[in-house]
Length: 244
Length: 317
Image 1: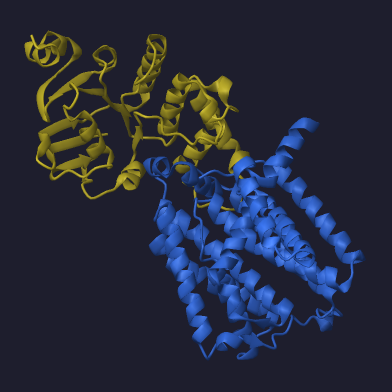
Image 2: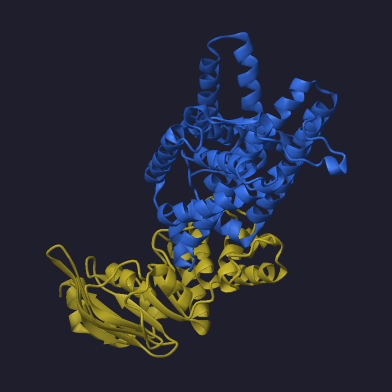
């Protein structure tokens, strides 16, 4: 898996939200993107996922230019995302949601001859994903009736059910209690064994625990790149976060 | 947009009950009862077509009477002008409706909410205006003299109201079977998911436009079949059939029955048509009663009669 963002620029009105941002990932790793409020993290996330088109600059995924591909097409290439605000199928149970996502992995979404819920392979896969994401005891519960932390886990479950090559996680611990955050960190650590991950996070402790490499954004520009130790020790990063 | 709970077991149970009631009424009923059953069956097919796109893709169409009309007029033209057998004409009308549905659907299915509703309304009214003024289609007089299928070679007289009623019920069963199969299939589940959260379907790589266009085309084809059967039941077609209020009545039926349950659409069509018929014989202001009844259901029974049946089912467990 390789992802390359070259000189990405994005302006909203008179505000330059992304300023010549370049990011590279050429192997399976967990990449973190952090920055204070308004740094451009969410905009960068949307540009990678296809929710937003950059003004200038190129994005390459596995050596193919994906500038003109929309979110659906990028997802089919293997870029899967979870959302900061839960984006679930409210009337579906955990099992139904995972099986629905798996129908895309197995490319049977145009099938009209067989019942999805009777598909044995997908059933087994759904249970495996439920186990990996800590949802095995909640298979028959509707998404809307899950506790918030479990909904976040289902967010991840749906994202990985599509068999991604790259997992984009937008503030996966947003709104979670410390205990729930610990659970999600363990979950993502396990996922990072199988998948390349890019995490956009506000919580620096989460990023330090998970990321192999970290990019630091400030006011639309990349100001620092390094591992957790070097980011922690960087006076520049301390200045933008703490003003010291 | 909300839809009834996915409950295939109750769906089948309700269908069996409605079917038995229809068969019993047909066998033991009068000439008029059999004609009435055929009417309800055809309305149920139309209601199912509306229910399918409402619950699979979240598309509310105020122009679906157009496809009813396309089926009716196509069937009439094919049988009268081209000598095609009425039975074959019904099959052809499915194709005609579905093809027109694909063409229209390609351009409109990604429109959201009110915009989709208004575009379908506009298309329906354009069609209505055209058929009213078209000499080829009989203008305001419509077309008469449309025959029913001829199966005399098998000893079946379709002019017998009992037989024709059973014929329409067979069509209903076939369409019900196909629509439930699709509802339960990966395509159907993805369409249901689009109604619930289309952005998420896009994010997992779904072909949102393709799925919705297929659903719209299928629904258009089914509505066209209803139109074809309608014209064979009555022997004539008038342009009033294509007015937007017919689509509105269809939507009332599926809301009363419970959107998304398929069997609920049939139940809604049955209940609404019976109440309309019975009340109109008793009081002049029957539409007021229907209106109040509809408002009551919308306010207090969001899943319609289907929701009520679910509650009864839960209590009986």
